[in-house]
Amino acid sequence: MSRGDERVASVSLETTLMSQGVRRFSHEEMIGLASRVRQEIIDRLQHSQSFPTFLRPVPADLSQFEGKQTIALEVGGTKMRAGVVTVDQGKAEPTGEMLEGRLTDQSGQPLTRFADPTDFFDHLFIALPNLAQLIKDDPEAALSIIFSFPGVPTEQPDRLDCRVTGLTKGFVIPGMIGANFVELFNQYLIDKGITDRPRRQTVFNDTPVLISGEANIGLVVGTGYNFAVAVPVGKLRQILGPDFAPEWDDRETMLVNVESGAIDLATRLLDPEYLNGDVRSTSIIAQLDNLLPVEEKGKQMDEKLVSGKYKGLQLQLILSQLSQASLINSRTMPQDAESGWKTELVSSILEGKWNTDWGIDEADRATVIQVCEIIRDQAAQVVASHLAGAVELTDQLRVKAVAEGSMFWKLPGFKDKVEAYLAELGISTVHFAAANDGMSEAGQSKAEFASLKRGGVAGLAYWYR
Image 1 (cartoon, rainbow, N blue to C red):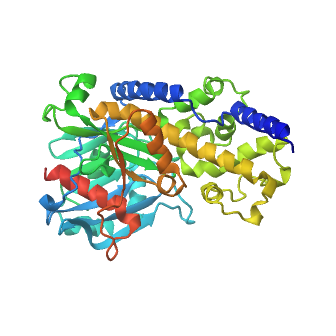
Image 2 (image 1 turned 60 degrees about the horizontal axis):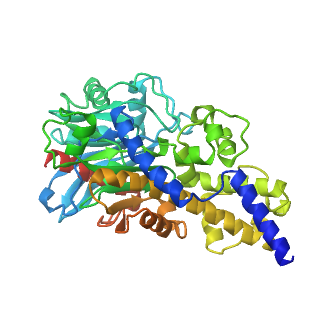
Image 3 (image 1 turned 45 degrees about the horizontal axis):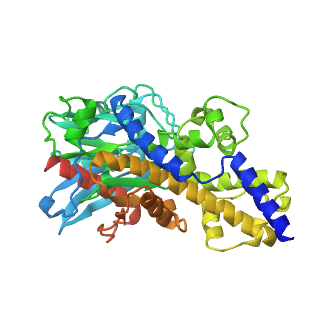
């Protein structure tokens, strides 16, 4: 191919990708996106779509909680976890057995639909058969519950409750939406004879508990996407009114669960026609959305640009379009969405690891690498622009974030790209720490229980502040 032919092919590739919404944002677009995100968070706070949690940042030094313990319980997906978390020699450690189980039906299939809250709690205790005894064994222990569904926290003298505003991940629990979770759970515990009086409980979403020490952002970029931000209470009062959180000092910071995947500003830049109702759109965003279950259509589209579980499918859809445009060999295409094109494939390609089973011709590899780089960079720009908008609410022009998720840490170049785009947006002092930093992994305390331990510590910080 001559240099002129190469230039035409490159222009054709870029034009085709641009027409599908597969592109990097311009500097001006990122600045505008960051500004709109800031205003969107304010609007969402006012309309109870982003949620102040009444939780303070967990200190990096846990020695002030030495010897304190709580029963930690993780609820909100099909996998449940529970255990006693104790601070021992400045570390959050499990005491005794750590429980783990799944919500399943009688045939062992994952279960997300329940008759009512009682049915949901029944299955919780079936999944964790030793949980009832764990609660009975320590009648004075507070419960620290990670409830990974959207909800508006409400602070009561004996509990931090949460009014459930919606259910995600395909869950259906009639009677749960609009109710206070702790109120329902306490009544269940009493009705079942597990306890004889309401228990002290703290309930919160999983993302805010990532913030520790001097960090002002808790970031999740894995199968899902969300972040929490530490906002001064004085600033929250400016947004929500002077009577918000009357027991708190203006200078204290409260952790706000942003529910950032639902902001959906980045996807509107890439395909405004589709997200405004034009079903004729053939963009990758429209194609991806049209492959989702009915209850997921049009929702959390920014998350789908960032979430790792969609990267393989996104790549497949893009390559299909390039094949139809004769820009790559059609032999490179998998046959269907179940062909095994997972997120790890994008990582492998960016690492230069090729497998002949993928059916990607050597002549097409440079094009496929270019596509993977755009997919990665676009997701990194979404994250950086979102964080830049949120950082303004912290009253600090620096980012210290505790981050978790395989996409953030394992997708080659992703973390570096987020940092570079933040610098481009004027936030040059950035430090990202892994979520399990400082967490002991001794004995049964394995990585999969890291979120349970963080939840336990967040509960201790609430009850013993």
